[in-house]
Length: 508
Image (cartoon, rainbow, N blue to C red):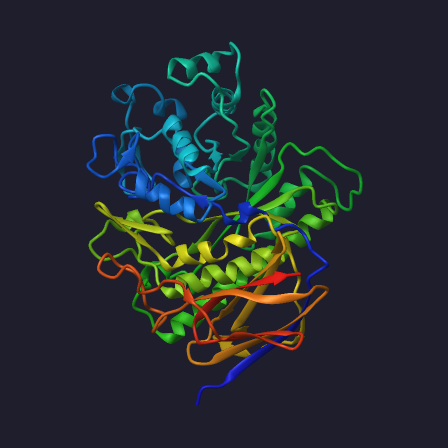
């Protein structure tokens, strides 16, 4: 017989915590499979509606979730990409072989100007990853100059020749990608010196102040983090030091085991579902571990922590190129995302950015395209429902009674997660019930303000395997939610199994 797990907590609506950066809701687009071509970009001659070759429906959908930044051109692709190959007349651009992702020929028709046009259409900030693995310091320095410098500098003149007079504003720059793996198989000590060198020569031009992001660890490699922090600071340093870069970026993919590429995105057992959620919960441990190491060298928390690749990774769909990483997206994936955002909010004092992998047609995508048709995935809806957390102030939840825990594999997990924030007089509460059979109840005592219950919505479906297709676009889509009420000083929320709920609370 189904039971109910209860969490009782207190929130002080008048005592705000750190700001939840909107950049925690960032995105990622790599030259991989159908992410760029057929995803974002179809070419100017396509019958699919477009602006300069960029799909109109994709832009409109992403504007609805206010994506704050877009990371490009990779990923592993970034460290074999030479930016000069992607500028100038398309017919004159040299092609290359994309050795990481399917050994397909890349024609470079989508390059720097096309990417910047995309960012302008999306009203989002570009996050560009430079080539450290096979490039040079000069190459990356020139790219920064090409994009951000005015006047008569050599790269400024080259940009004008290619049709852009004024420079762009580009704050975010990644100093390579996964240099511990596909970006060069480097040792931490070697990369630490390279990162300092590259960051030094990536200059601030004309008031464009760079936010340089060094390659951090894979998963829980805390030793990598320590070696990078040692290279820019000293143990227990209290004095303010000028670091050549401003953040470290780690990667973590949710996967029940190293057999992830053999697991189906849509056909999975209850055991596999719970193992997935246990893996998703590890994000909290990993962020906490990297933060503890960074605190030893940066107690004032001047260096940000970034997770610029996260998400689920399953077997590619049957009939597709396995190196294109195209996978369906179910309610299970959406609940992984909602749980991750609760974790990111909790660590908002150190976490400054996160980028889901990837935005269109690859891994845990927001959007899937099939010719002219567009599918909004369950994960897309989590981003949309959580939009109010962007740049809001975190409101810590102080537990009075923790929910019951569930045994999974060799450990156990909580099946109820929640987070809250406040912005412009509205508190947004997000809550996730991961249990597949049992209800969950959240009793939240709201102190420090008069309040009343506002709009509430729920994302759920008949089963965790449910997903959206071109034949059924709304199998998993947000619906109005009524099982929320005021009970004295408490906000009471009753969550059905495998559901994600958001509640707006109007503060007086």
